[in-house]
Length: 402
Image (cartoon, rainbow, N blue to C red; front, side, top):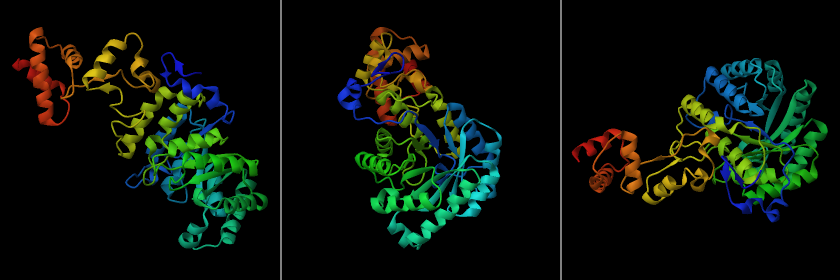
């Protein structure tokens, strides 16, 4: 893959310059773990029924997500039943559930048939002391017992020290080493609970964790500073093997790392194959938006409804002239890549002659050529009055006056 792929994307050639790529340490295979059904549902205002969770899991598997974090079974019987049904559906993806560091949670997870557990414990000294009111010794003992029980039952164990990004590095590593030695750890999640990583900070911590441990390092980041995607990619560049994401970026506070821009960025900007069916991303996004009743902003990267279109005169004219030659002249990636429709031209106070021609053709309205400027001026004035672009009925009404 390269910076220009016909019918897919056209990005900066600097991205693929050897001076840049020689510093990459991507794993041979990167897995996507989707946490929409757990961390996504923790977004205030979102509540999912069992049937909703099953539908979302089916779509996640359909697009090629490798791991599905199906929920927290100890939360409710509804969650436990949903996880059991998702497992029973044999979707092809590995199914994980989120557990407290307690043997009974691990036993519940095993009874549901999941492939693995994500064992949560508070990972920073301050939160442990002042939030949980536990000592490090208590936390370690709980994790050792719980992870040993999970491992003995044949479950894959991901240790999940929440707020580990803000912990002293020596504390985090000593804690993980103790649990690994006396309990069991198959992989360690580097958890940025409050989205406080810079990309550089995330990369350094992954690098040092990989130097200390032989087991895989996973990246679970949030987006409070709007750097979750960038920091996750930085972690992957240093050899992290699993990226935790959610559909539409839903999750606590500012949300989790959004699945859609992460996988498109990995493929187009970094040349990393993800195994995700990009052309189905829009379908998945719309399903989750509908079932969560949490709308997607129209300009949200990759899945926004108004990404592919222009209202301003100059770019509208550039698109009109270039689209037949190569749509990528005016696009960061082809709209077909994610299952979107062909770009449209809107009509508002910023529009020009090509917007008007587009709308005349779209609506089948015919007026004398010498009247086009007059119609455009009227349309611009109407848009200003309404403080938005025009719809088809409004345009036809204005044209009728001409």
